[in-house]
Image (tube, rainbow, N blue to C red; front, side):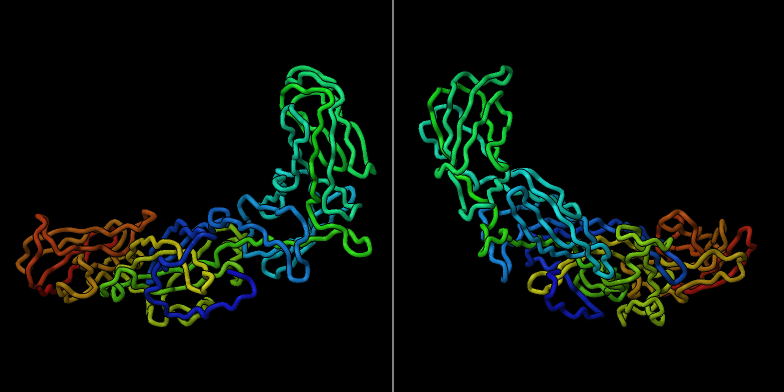
Length: 479
């Protein structure tokens, strides 16, 4: 989210947010995390590994020039790589160009919670070369536009100029080098040669000689300006010229060193939303009806930086327990209509990444639902086993197309057998298993007999047998 902009109020409950398909996602690619769920007694636990921003964020071009520091140079720095910072970040970079160096200086965040910073610097020596900048960002100054090869009377192989020319002692924005080949010959990749290029500036205040010994080998002409030639034939007396433009701003009034400034803008997603879809949500025609259970902001929630072991880890495992409305003791504000989490009822969960678009619209990653059935733990004895709902009414709103009756508080390893009122055998069920393979205390019955036929209305008998003892009971089915 852009720093300094007004954030929209995040209202809960938040229904039918959708995917905001009309919002351009060119600057950030939102993807959902992989989530593990564990059903409990009237609660659902969610675990996911925090997504590293490198999988989500692309970096825009640097913003050249600030209001108080207009950009005066010829170079246009570019950024590459993947941003690894925990939060959105704007770095104002000062460029200090002198006769022997070009240095980038900026403030790097050392603590995302307090926004504490330290000054870092980076010396640039070459064009077309990526330098490690910060948080996975790499920065380069392209040679395009800095070296204008004019040709002259040169018939040899075309030279390649590169490097950061550090002729900052002159107030000129560019300087023309005239080069003349003193000795000709064949420049190959595997043979030594003795081709010499004499050079001088137009006002003859600087001059020198460059000896070319091998094709493709770079040599320094002057003050960081470098050149190399591919293989080819040179002729004595031929000449060429190149206009070298200063990569950054020229010397200011009073002989001050040239200072340019630019801003590197790195963006990551705002945070996570835990979404829940329950029975009442599913009764609506739209498949996108759900409730926001928690809004976990990456850079504002103090619990975000601590993993379950208590260590500060911006890329650690995330953990959230949904218990519905439970007094607000966890510091989160769930949807006021989310109600409690009820055992035996189906719930769909999804964790999505989200951010605010430039027009303050909410954008989210795709929603991937996982269905769970919260259930109590197994009981030690069969005495507490009971049936829900009782009576069972077919086509009730909570079915969601899957007729189901539950036997609760079933001991580990026990079996529930179902009989009709006359004692005829109908079917048998055992406790269900959670997503992690552990056994719950609930045994589900789909109201079908052992041949797969739906049962009719009437009174039915159940019997529980296992290490926890035995119990018999009755329930009613109404079609």
